[in-house]
Image (cartoon, rainbow, N blue to C red; front, side, top):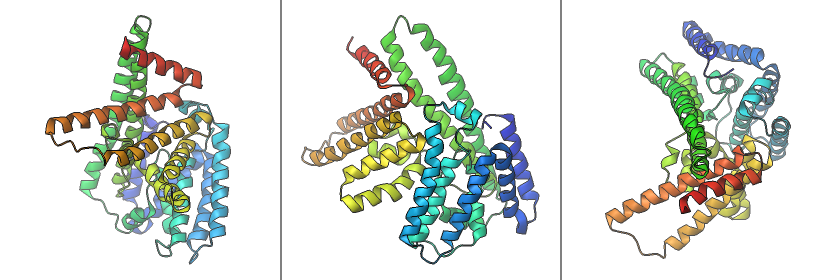
Length: 384
């Protein structure tokens, strides 16, 4: 089901109405039931998997201190199941994946939520929880389909103090409207439609400009679509009285790649920072290897394919260069003239956003030859 559809709007309105009309003692159970029915109807395979994942997660999270080998075994099992579907869907467009159900609905998101719960319990970062809390956390309709990968601690706090808050209600409606403006008007109409039509008209006469605009268009449209989906999910959650993690924070205004990855897909990058980067650095004592491993996981989470491995490596090596530059930077004279500082800030922002836009071309083209071709055409235009 598309988020930009009358059907999804109907689901949100019906869920909101049923949720708040239900007496308080049964309200949370009602939301779980609605989520389960929705998932069983839309994606029965995903419903079965989520039930299984939830049962295993509850079993482990209820233990005083889960053994390391148990945590490792469950991690391998969950990731193996996710990987099987990811491998089968490699190379397919997002629309094809949704239409043909190549990846069970929400699998990428709730797999990482389950692992988050298990890891935090293993670390002893939260006390023993009730199974009802875990089930409600995993069967949470607003974030089931497109994220974000919200954290259990924040959800647990809201779980016990949910009430009809007019402030949250207003914020939720505003965020949903904001998200739909991003997706439908800015992304689909302006960037995909009007700009796309104009680009098509200049393609034959100005191939270099077309190649550059194709790169820019892809990066901008991806942001407005993806962040718009996140806005709808966050707004929907607030309508139900829950605040979930923000997923984007103006990432294209970042001054370096490290800052970009703190502002882009925040829920996923923070998950990988906590459970991948920290683990690799603690073992290897190498921030560089930590950066490479983290970006590889982020890439493969999106798609199990060579092009996303290349995309992850491209960003990983970019982060390593930035890390090394920080060492060199300390030896350089400080820039104190305000106009020069402002110029450097603008330049670093432009370099960062173009690096990320050019990186997205890696996953938009079917092969390396196509990527190099569009990079070359776009770059040549600057020297003509």
